[in-house]
Image (cartoon, rainbow, N blue to C red; front, side, top):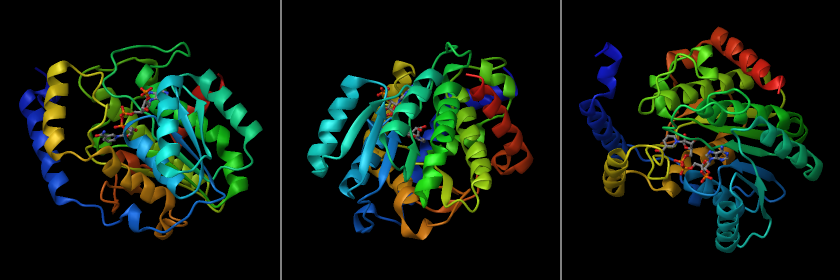
Length: 321
Ligand SMILES: NC(=O)c1ccc[n+]([C@@H]2O[C@H](COP(=O)([O-])OP(=O)(O)OC[C@H]3O[C@@H](n4cnc5c(N)ncnc54)[C@H](OP(=O)(O)O)[C@@H]3O)[C@@H](O)[C@H]2O)c1
């Protein structure tokens, strides 16, 4: 057993779960969306992966605030169900579904093209869609599927919508990352599925680290444009995020989660905070914890030289497609 395998020992998994419980019990968000009176009337927001989990509650909050909300989902059936629910609960008819598979660069380009043809502005982009625990798979673009879904698709989408966001400024980009990025690694061969260990949340952790690294570099490039870019951890949240894991792990997650983990509505609080709160006006290139506090991300996510390299690498990967 190599040293790293210790971290995937069941005892370590159990201790991580216990730690998560403690974090859950101790940390309550200092910000409450219900007592935030910010209105989004006249604003347009895009939320990826808005048909379930955290994304659905982010979109619902924006709809309640009067925004024009675009649910960017890959399944027409699941997206339509969420669309109807959000329209009904919020009473806002200006909520729309657009199909987007973030793992496919063609789909991202198609979505962005239609969006730019149809929409006059974009004030909030929440890159929320992600997967965890996928087995090894290479997309037709030649990318490892989790990297394509969690990082390259959102990276390309953001870049394609950037000019419109600049024109719409003030505007905010929110990347839903994870505290798991602390266990992530950077190796550029991973993007093509090389030298990766597909075990537990290993690959997911790497992608969540790239999320923060590139969001920080994006923020640097966007200085003085009126567009901010921040990353956020939503907490340990009882959603469908474990759907690709083994039955026993899902059972543990769901059982423990039933009692202690955040609900998707609670998990949406820190991303909503980053997207709408008045106190974050002009704040950019930061990482926020699930209790809405400003915290330092992992050392690799603070390496400015690495960020430039990573961003340029992802630009090259996505620009040739
Ligand atoms: N839950 C947690 O404990 C936790 C902790 C830390 C961070 N996060 C982050 O929070 C975000 C939301 O996760 P969640 O917990 O709400 O998970 P979830 O319930 O599994 O929801 C994920 C969403 O992403 C969508 N999605 C997945 N692949 C997609 C693709 N290729 N194209 C378009 N949409 C796609 C899913 O659509 P389908 O329904 O069609 O699959 C779903 O709407 C993620 O970025 C995740 O990394 C979650």
